[in-house]
Amino acid sequence: MKRPKRAKKPNLKQVAFTRFMLVVAVFVLWIGGISIRLVHLQVTQHAWLKGKALDMRQDKKTIRTLRGDHL
Image 1 (cartoon, rainbow, N blue to C red):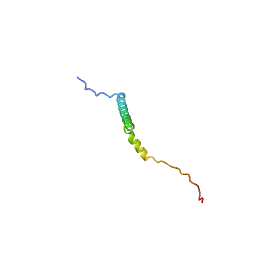
Image 2: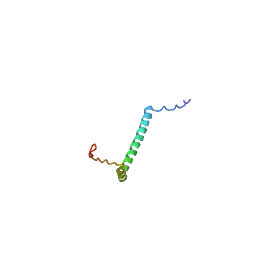
Image 3: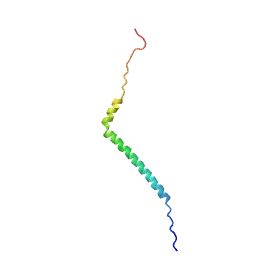
Image 4: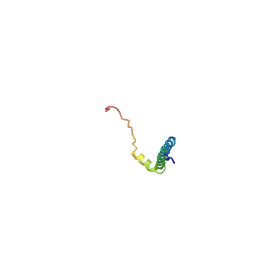
C-alpha cells in the first residue's frame, strides 16, 4: 500500500532570505534610478538649470543713509 505524498514544508530560512533579497533588489533599483536622474540633471540640464537659478536670484543692495531729519 502506498502512502499519500505529503506537501513539502517550505524552508523558512530560505523564504526569509528570498524576501530579503527582493527588498534589497528593489532598494538598489530605486537608488540607481535616483542616481541616473541626478546625473542626467547635472550633465545634460546644467545650462538650463543655471539660467533658471540666476533668474530666481535676488540681490540685496544696502544704501547708507543718515539717521533722523538733518536740514
